[in-house]
Length: 150
Image (cartoon, helix red, strand yellow):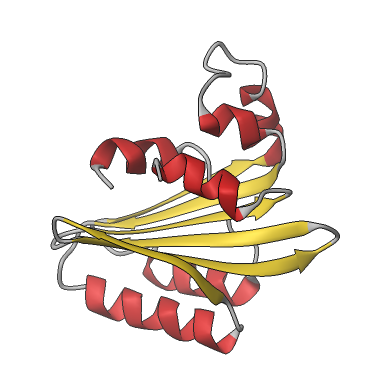
């Protein structure tokens, strides 16, 4: 998965759990860390965009919200990855898929969020970058795989 795929995913994804929010908040004030939140109202606006042929715009209307966490500070990456994966284990997320390509490793975690909704977490690590993307909404693993190009 290359940077273009990550860029596409960055326009789409979300987070909902309070404990995970605590992980995001714990590191959000560090240099080299950025957090982006996009509400469901902004996502709904993507539905009618000219790019409606893209996988992102096809599922944007089915998302509740999104939050993206990115770190390009190599000294923080191991700590953030450790905290995040500990949270996913504790909260019983299942590993839906794993991919490795040219030193980039992506794990997609999944759990049911009730009311027909699912939560997906894409945790991507490279040598000098970590990205966590969460998707919450009426989406399936097939929708998420469409975003990654697989």
